[in-house]
Picture 1 (cartoon, helix red, strand yellow):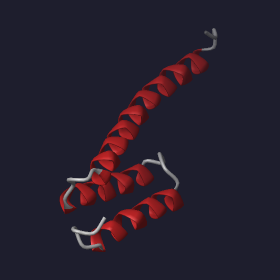
Picture 2 (cartoon, helix red, strand yellow; picture 1 turned 90 degrees about the vertical axis):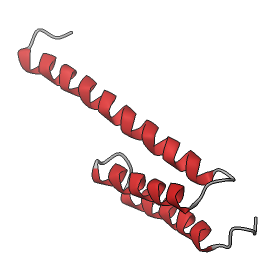
Picture 3 (cartoon, helix red, strand yellow; picture 1 turned 30 degrees about the vertical axis):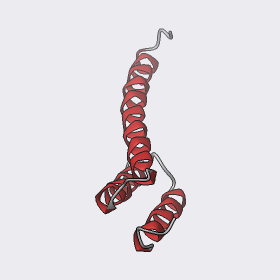
Picture 4 (cartoon, rainbow, N blue to C red; picture 1 turned 180 degrees about the horizontal axis):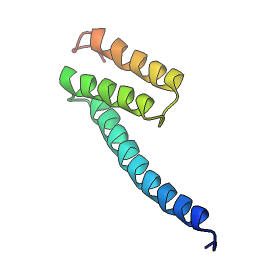
Length: 84
């Protein structure tokens, strides 16, 4: 570790941000996994869309990446539940 005070602080801040971002990414992946599950209902899919929006607002995902994923989820929302 560096002896410079500001760089020591940057290391601490980076570790804290990494931990926070890791939890956001983990919850996002969980929401997406639940929305893709065979027995998922519309509420799971809406939660996944909400998680994607949050990830974009926190700069975890690029907005185009989230838009593509949301589009895919929206397509499955409009599809009848009995078709596979």
